[in-house]
Image 1 (tube, rainbow, N blue to C red):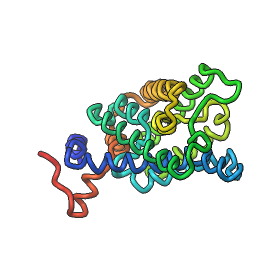
Image 2: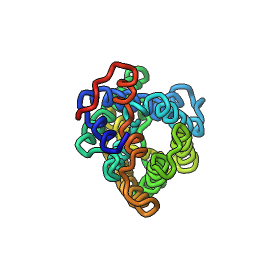
Image 3: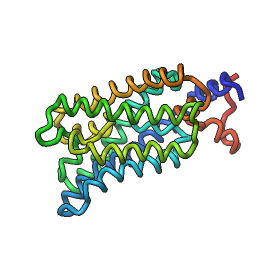
Length: 260
């Protein structure tokens, strides 16, 4: 199948609702685990270690990519959606919908935690650590997201298209980043993950760190990808960024044919 035919498939608006549902559903589970770790640690008297709290989101992302990456691309993160669009692998017109779906999933996850446990563990909110300035936390979020999005873009590219192993690379990076840097900034790397608890708590005092930092880091990763591999927009990268939902449904006999 040629690149033009692939792009026509992905532009089919009839499938966007399923993709948006997938983003909301996947982000719900990511934030449920990421914010839920500190919450359950608080209500259980410290029985969830920091290592477990940072490993769980990485393992969850790995699972989500494997079970629904083909539907929506499993962005789960506004910074990732912006990076894919800036790289030319994802249409800019679809970015707002993805971001809204991701934020909705994050708020629903934190709403569930709040309904069960109140504001225990500050609902897993991300803040600069003790003695850490806002500027230091911002720099960490930029650098950590640069690495995360570089991993995502690299494993999605034609040069290093590694299929299901991409889930291991991305999930492994999230675990690694959290293990050594969570005490500094919380290792969010994801505006939706941080805004979910902040919105439920009504405390946006440091939210800008977790919006600005990841977006800057994601855009820097796009620049690094250009230096390493040239322009984006190749077929494997498009498939990774946008999923293969129309192709899957067509093969199963339930989809609509791609527009001519």
